[in-house]
Image (cartoon, rainbow, N blue to C red; front, side):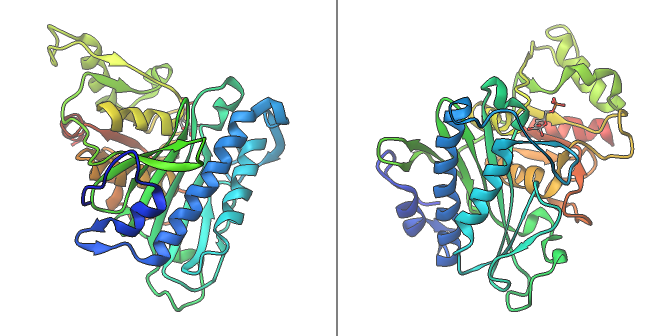
Length: 334
Ligand code: P6P
């Protein structure tokens, strides 16, 4: 992506001027991404109000994942559908919160997938949460929408990003030619460019995993974490730090911002499930961002973006971040 002046480049203007591998961003994709950004701006305001507008706690309903939906989950899902329904190039959308995809225009170049509010178990305790989105190129734009249209590998993504609702509301975005970040200016209601060419350091001293599951991990993961814990004098001969926010968007934002490795691997608690996180609207968009920032993302055996999905809501084991660490984990899994 060519350089733009930071701090005074607004999102819409950025999309109009940025060159992606020498090409302008198609206007249909610009329109879609602006609609997503505008919706996330509204959602940022809702999230910040929390209990003040009765949004904490459960909506009393369940989603396709069998998870209790938080009120904000449902609001986020509805806001995103409403926010993009006017996009002329959007054939359809799929969400973690809905079993089946929803046709928008029915035909068109793009498919939008999202986790409208990831980390929602953190809503009630005021910990950062976020929206994750992925845009796929529809293989046959003129054909009426079908669920199978969405079952494309992560390599077919033309855009992906997240918006983290934390002390700042910050968006990370890739269009396939690097990663940029924008922070919401709440006074002017604009996402403003704050960082271009986001790079993940190839080495790190920080790992991120839910340690309470240690006894359930597969051997390669157990070996990797044990070596991190052994510190100086052990196999790695350096001390590691550990972080676990239990909000993928916040944990991945830290990895993109200062390096590290994030893991939610398969474990034997539910051995029939490949992992907890979903491939299509969590692992794939985050993997696109991480690869574009010079990192790597694997399920232990394959790069996540090479996986061919068979179900819209399928789960996957996720290990992503600093390249050298992922390569080590891949060796341990081999
Ligand atoms: P655990 C949030 O519910 C989520 O889907 C991810 O955002 C997060 O990384 C993970 O689950 C946390 O899971 O088992 O540590 O609560």
